[in-house]
Length: 280
Image (tube, rainbow, N blue to C red):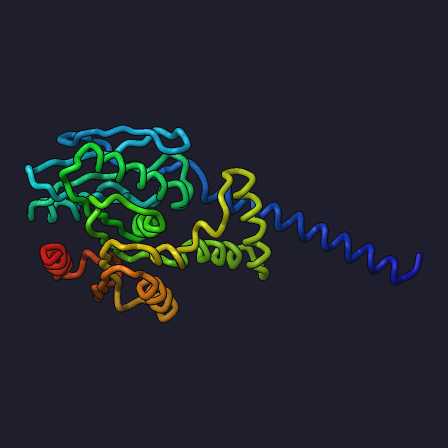
């Protein structure tokens, strides 16, 4: 056997080994992030009205209503797949003191990082629009909850939804996860990694990796949107936010905070948002 033939065989073996390694990492990535939801929603449902429905894929869904008065205004809090009920309860307390009833959306048990959760949200919007046809709804989501809402806005939404608040939406969330995984595992070819993740997602969940891209999610949206973002974002995150903001065709505004952690820690957070909602 010639040296050239040996080199070609060795190269082919290496390519096959490399593909095998990438396939293994693709499976490991999906298994790590697409798993049962380990974040407890809450322990005590006291004073909450429990609602149940079925999503389009047959998954049983639950949500919880906190009605404080007979106003026709409800805020639907979209719970992110890595968040706890307690966080939203803190926010809802202030809005309730100002006359808004609350609905809390519990996520499905199997986390899909927003892909199927966005469809679940659309199911809930139709559910409550039919249950309460005289009511008006405002969607509120923070971080991954805001991502779920953004993805849902690709679809036509019932006219009963009159406003959206996206607090710290992460336009590149899924890409950032892949980049972080590659960095932690010394993988240089992120594009090949993404390709293998896509193959695994198709195989396991019939999900395409493009479904996590929010780039076009607001292009056909007609519902007013208030973006809440910290001025302390790095330039890359800020540019991605502006792309999302500029792509939105409805009325819109950005409320900038100066917080290091969560935007609601801003002193005038509720004052600004309540004024915004009042001026609808």
